[in-house]
Length: 457
Image 1 (cartoon, helix red, strand yellow):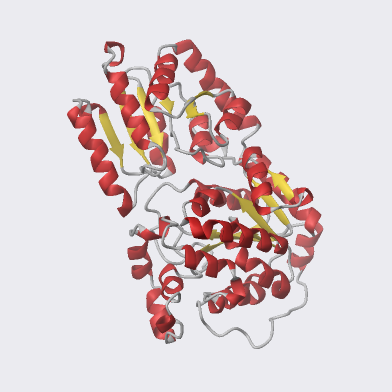
Image 2: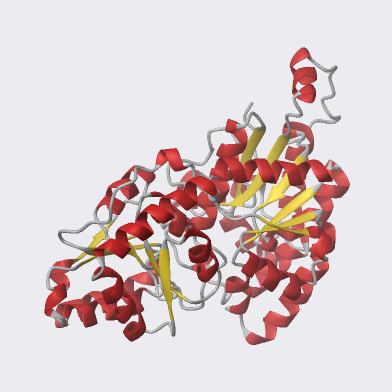
């Protein structure tokens, strides 16, 4: 059945007797789990989106009835409806327009047009949706839920959950979606779980006048959630303090991948290459890496060293990337630099085979960074700044090394140290792969997540 956003809901819930399949599911404790995930349009490497997709896939593999419900934009550029026949809720164009009074009573045909595949694909290529600055009022309105300007979209989502999906658990991808929680709990009558991952990056980038208000609103909305799952110890502690989360509500589960889907290979040796996997932008420290590469190339020992990057970009990033390319050309090392346009899993497999280490020197650190586990699973050691959750992941895995401060000079020094010691490089490679199999296995982590769900039911 295809559910149309904005379509009429059934006049009464479609209740039917339990089927033999229903009875079997109950005996096996099979749960219906809906993960509500912001779509990103597929224009850049979105670790948080990939993480959520991996969790749902692992839950399905374990026998649970898990589905992904996308918000704002499609999860990929391949179409409007995902494989489960679920449409995009809270279409990015419609919710933005409704911030302006003249658009708050749009005719249904116009709303449907703004939520069409072509319009959403066009919106995904634009830069504004990835910037918090300028979206303070929209973020606040979304967090206000039924009291915000997108109350109609919220009711459509709640009706879909009540009459179509009928979940046992609703799991929202991040705390910026907490405006949904109260109405979902009240009307769908199921527990609501919320992941915590990089919300601080969005809120702290807002105008100074909005930050304190937003953190207070997030703390207030946290009361509508049954459990929080942070992606690292570091981020759990940070968000517990910022959102005043009771300790008994907070759990920590690291991000994982399916190890069997990643081919292990030794770090590339001839030539050696530094890899970068993330959105290619200033915030993710790409300029620091470029500057470190230029410094390394001044050493004759690294005359054949390459720099390879992948992860895509938005319209915001074009000027920044062109600046980095000009810098590489001015230093006569542009011929040793390559941007790989594709970053699907098969393309990443080939990418990892061509690099010796991975470094994504995010300016202020990160809550986790899925690319780290993807690299470790492929046998590629990490060289990361001593910020955010990076030291935590490297300490657990033994698959890399940290440096400080987060400057080009410090990074170049650490990269030179690692790349000059092949035995150490290979030891970290093996340790990292083993850690993914033992600790960062998505299948094992999903079992732990189900255990958390069960305590709520």
